[in-house]
Amino acid sequence: MSRPIQLEPFDEQNEKLESHVRPPNWRNPKPDGPYNLVVIGAGTAGLVTAAVAAGLGAKVALIERQLMGGDCLNVGCVPSKALIRAARSVAQFRRAGDFGVQVPDYVSVDFEFVMRRMRTLRAEISQHDSVARFSNLGVEVFLGNGRFIDSETVDVDGTRLKFNRAVIATGARASAPAIPGLDQVSYLTNESIFSLTSLPERLGVVGAGPIGCELAQVFALLGSHVCLLESGQGILSREDRDAASIVEQRMKSDGVSMLCSARNLQVTDAESGIRLDVEADGEFHSQQVDQLLVAAGRAPNVEGLDLDKVGVQYDVRQGVHVDDRLRTTNKRIFAAGDICSAFKFTHAADFMARTVIRNALLPGRAKMSSLVIPWCTYTSPELAHVGLLPGDLTEVDTYLQSMAQVDRAVLDGEQDGFVKIHTAKGTDRIVGATIVAQNAGDLIGEVSLAMTQGIPLRKLASVIHPYPTQAEAIRKVGDLYNRSRLTPFVQKMLRRWFKWNR
Image (cartoon, rainbow, N blue to C red; front, side, top):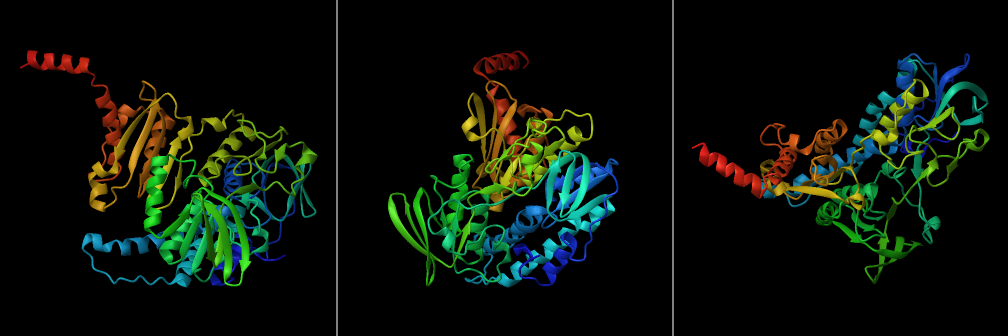
């Protein structure tokens, strides 16, 4: 079996990673009787499902055909955030003069070191998702291709596992749109870009979603000339437009050139690299790049599972069909994570797995729709969101606090941003929020807690934060709501009260 591309270059760091997530000398256990639960896929959803089920005392089998840890560990959250941290060091260096710190004009980036550091940290973290750890938790780990034989049997490369319940957690993979000429060139996705050993002088990025924006900004800061192509009017099309605009301006100042409203893109293998011909904003553009990153789609991993044999409905774009309790169309089989969800986030997969446990192994009636799922794009500044999307914001009241009026943000030189909280019309029930700030991913948790526990906006005004912190912006939004209740009638009555009480 060939080594996965994620393990290139196969150096000391990736050898350590392999020893944890796909040990070459691993021998699958011999099945001993039926399993309470068989889980196919060892990404976040599968790992959490297996670990929790085994912790409850269930007999569990976990099947993985590639690397334990899935996308998050190997080609997603973990490696990308390591690169983001390095890129932010460059950004801080460039801005040092704003704080009176004199530094040389030129920043030298050791890209080989940056990537080696990433691989080292990824290998260390991989212990948490390792075959050894899950075996010690009581999970029987099978490395190989799992497929359904019938509604109570899964085959793993010739070994048959009987089950009472099964969970499909095979996730999703990078996919490429139909772009003329793309199949004639060697291009990168998130599954291969972390294997680079040299910095591309010129990098083209197709797609301005979270992956495209994060990596475009990272590589620009590390020294690449980056051109980002997006078919929409601007980046991060799902997000609040005011928020996305702030991120867009920062990315441009960090050196990312953008071609939005891109149409009729054609890709050609040229002698000096890859040529991109495209219409953008009504004009024709031709770009030469050394590497091309395609970050414009995900496809569910439904192939090879033989889902038709067990009556599990699916489609190749949306994945496995589930109800609100994450049951498939076969009552003995559930699904969790990217294979069945529009929320393709590690933390969403984690909590979907917990929902599956309650419904598949316990007499639970947990619902996916009851989950409050925040998300964050880890650009600089970060853009975090929870609740209703911008297109769904009808019949709401909106309260906005600019970071320019938050002392800590001013002192940090991070005034570009805001906290925006939406409430149901005429009430203080929070239905959504967007935060743009350097640590928006951390700040959004307070709003998510309020939504999860039914804490109204007015009560956020009474939460005491240490001074000075950027989190004070959330308390200030609570103050805005309380001031909105100070109507002319209330003010008139208060004046009378104070006059009488002198």
